[in-house]
Image (cartoon, rainbow, N blue to C red; front, side):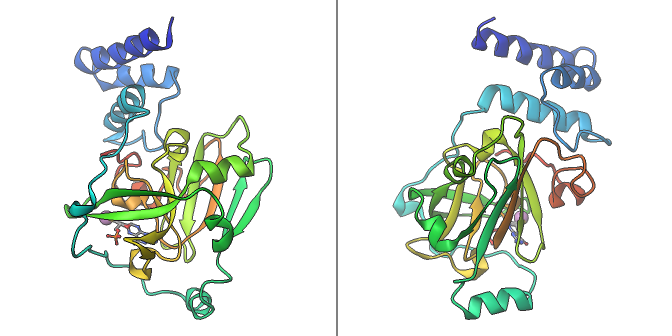
Length: 252
Ligand SMILES: Nc1nc2c(c(=O)[nH]1)N[C@H]1C(S)=C(S)[C@@H](COP(=O)(O)O)O[C@H]1N2
Ligand SMILES: [Mo]
């Protein structure tokens, strides 16, 4: 089967299963093609599987909407964050010279990058929207480097399926699949609207995942681990948001 007809076939299978025999069958089709999200258990599990499976088959390469410069929000809204730890404050006092991002797990060369190291990768900028699950949003210009460039420098191993990432103080952690990790709009950002990324918006380093809801865009990014399974990470649901009852896959 060609890639296209295979996709059409699987999608029809998922859709037919959802309509005819219920979500449980859709779940089986998704499982056969490796499209099961980590939060597939529980009451909303079959729905999560259907959403993720269909999204991945149909919109794997789709792009988040980009805006024009005139649409940048005059007053971007910084969501509430937990107070910074002593460790964060020490790094801040040193102008974040000691800030590092570690990349380990299923990579050929585990690396630890300073902000200057990150800034040596190709620079990309995009004007995209942060959309919070609570119903507000804002548009800003984000400047950084595609996460894929950094992952490729570390050398992804063939078994790589997810990237798990967390903030310095571990106030939150998330994970994304390789489609999102290697998507050209997924950026490691260190600047916003032309200046250094302000601390309330996640400075000095934030992952922007514009194809998903705001909670996937973790601020104060310090650690990334590439893995083939999320089962042994936290409660096995793939993210802090999923452990709080939100969807692991939060495509918009
Ligand atoms: N480290 C960290 N990252 C975080 C959060 C947080 O509390 N801590 N909140 C998330 C949520 S729920 C949203 S909607 C966005 C908000 O981004 P903003 O403050 O730039 O508006 O950041 C996300 N990233
Ligand atoms: Mo949010």
